[in-house]
Length: 378
Image 1 (cartoon, rainbow, N blue to C red):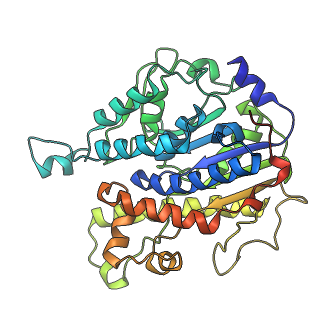
Image 2: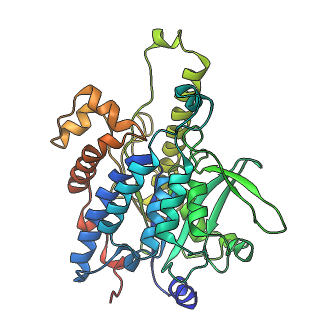
Image 3: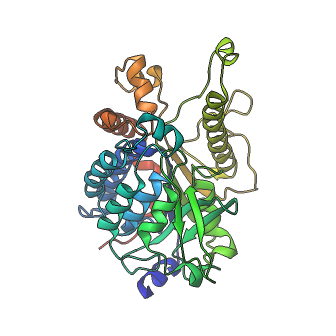
């Protein structure tokens, strides 16, 4: 932990990596990360560089928390990709029920025990305060029994560090990935003071895209870091899992059942939360990747929330629609695109790989990572 304290307390600019939720679509995230890792290796002249050598604080929600935790432990992206393929295939096997398909309607679709086994096998006995975590880690989960977002960190100066430091890393990540209807909640017995709680996916909040929350972790006093802001002082790289507009024809909506509305509105609310995240971060930053928010405010390049930018903000994501994918040289049928959008479609793993790499090759550029943020590696 002394090494982590030293790393977090180093003078100079800081680098943050935020990873979205999205189920098996986390493979798209890995495509971007593989490109970023290769680019940083070349930039630093360090062929063995891993992302924890560069980024000081890594955080994620849901599937992003799995990736973030492994990266914070010093894993190269290639190793994570292999683990992720296994995790995806095991996690998204339909749950067996004596009631057959009706059992999956009444309860969770998939068996959370498979996820727990795989997380335990990879993270073993590591706790939130483990020395195996080489950099700052942020995991976002939703505590369902108190309707509160829990931002779990390994930062020694954090207000609740002593209360949470004993939590097993696998359990923290399992809590963040407990997507309602997909998996049962994760019950954590010992939250301090003899209290326990039930946790669900952190994406059931404003933080499926955790980038704005990670900015707050880095800068607000309550989280124990208080890093300085500025376009040459704070770099925030945010990576998505693919996006699309959840919409339906007007006449079809007239026939929607309560379950149809529940599914549609959940997707739309998650999309709205992500859009607000991007709006705020583009508004307060210098962003070479800024994209239009909507037709009214554009990409906010003419707007600034503060007199000077608070950070250097990068956002990488890909639209999962035929036109956008066609622009990357990928020819998918309408049905194939629908499959790409599903969070539990393990048969789509090869296609998700292709999408992630194709999008990263086009979007991620060396100049996005200025020399001001280079750090000594090795």
